[in-house]
Length: 98
Image (cartoon, rainbow, N blue to C red):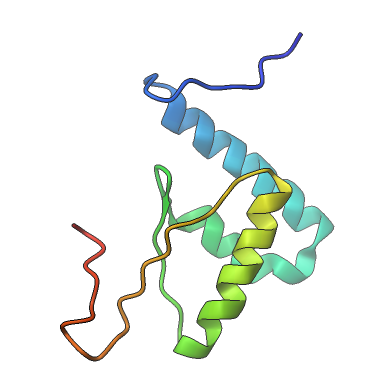
């Protein structure tokens, strides 16, 4: 019998999450080479369980979000809780460091 669950809060959980994410993303890249840019961003932009990145312009946001959702859903990951800090109105800016 194989273990299929990891208890969160265990000291090794972030390491195991990173290893599983990397394994999934590299495997996905072999099958879907046209997603190379998104996979590269995902591989280098996670901090523990948060994805922190930036894009060149606002028109890339929705396609990037959709592609990332699709890529991670293939591995049964649920990417959620997006923050956007590109608004010119300072009252609308969300600090991602709070």
